[in-house]
Image 1 (tube, helix red, strand yellow):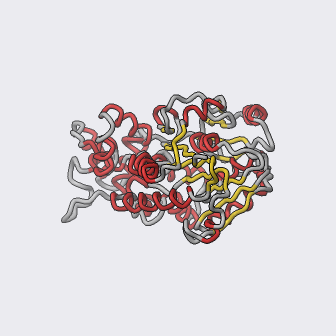
Image 2: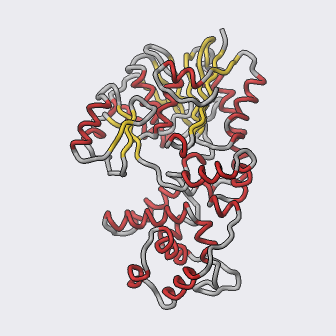
Image 3: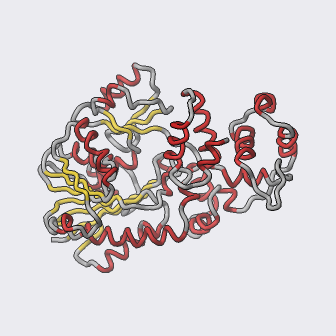
Amino acid sequence: MEATTQLLQFSQPADAALSAFFRSKKSGARDRAFIAETAYAILRRKRLLTRLATLIPPLIPTKKQHVSSRELVLLSLSRLRGMSQRQLEPALLEGEAEWLAEIRRQPDPTLTLGEQLDFPDWLAERLSARLPADQLLVLARALNTPAPLDLRVNTLKATREAVMAQLSAEGLMLLPCPYSPIGLRLKNRPFLQKHPLFLDGSIEVQDEGSQLLGYLLAPRRGEMVVDFCAGAGGKTLLLGAMMRSTGRLYAMDVAEKRLAKLKPRVARAGLSNVHPILIASENDIRVKRLTGKVDRVLVDAPCSGLGTLRRNPDLKWRQTPESIAELTQKQTAILTAAARLLKPGGRLVYATCSILSEENESIVDAFLASRPEFCRLSATDILADQGIRLENGEDLHLSPPIHSTDGFYAAVLQRQE
């Protein structure tokens, strides 16, 4: 109950809040897994559970009807996890068995669109403006389902076939990712951080959609490349391997802590061409020094993250229309600054893990309207040239129910000669 209460304050990302909770409590791996699964299930289905809890008077009456964390936990275990009254009995307090039984007897309530999707109303409204109801429900169901675990094979150290053979021999159930030539998808989510293949840099955890961004940028050996919003460097490592550790690969970010996490990962991956650069903003002098000199730039822009709800369900409750407006201003500024780095003929990939058009097509369309020296390239054609068949239109749109990846958007831009 305590873990759920902390997560529902939304004062920090759910994974950070849960980590802090576990550091303060002594519990075994099985208990931790149970607590985490229950808390994340509540974050995914909070609107449905809240509606169910209000079908009858609350367990603890108050002046203002309020659904407690305990009520959400009990309903989650009963309704989502399928636990019977008999299984729950040892943990129930006085009156709770009768309360749960009474809710079970109630007819299914009529749900609003937001409650059906388990999205906040503002998000449901924005998505319903561009998606038919049936497609929106399919998307919501996929985003409210836990994601599988995708791995990327570091081609400097191993092949996908060799990694798959070794993990299969160890009893793990996995398949090649359908699109990424270096991706593997596990059916369950084993702890791999201490696995020899992870420790020697042969594998990294990375969603298949994220891997495909590297193939859109398609860096070549010996080029000068910038990962403009590198973060902890998952895509930087991919780009470095694609460059065969040649040329110069600048990993830029405004967060010192994130860049600090990149250094040990670079060493583990066996890369010598990565140069982390801490910048104060997109207009930092260290950025301006590279104006017109760079072959390829990846802009994995800071965004709402609403395409990653399978992994980060708290984001739909933490984002607001106001935060989206702030992000679009930041995205516009970052894209404009990053584009200045390109030499004529250079390529830029603008990407987000958002499902909102205002963070995606709208940003790119406005940029191209004001910058005639840039043109759009076909993402479908670029991937097809590398043997990746993904019919997707001019820009890349990845959707959990269709592609089994996170929700990604990417546009490929070229500065004309």
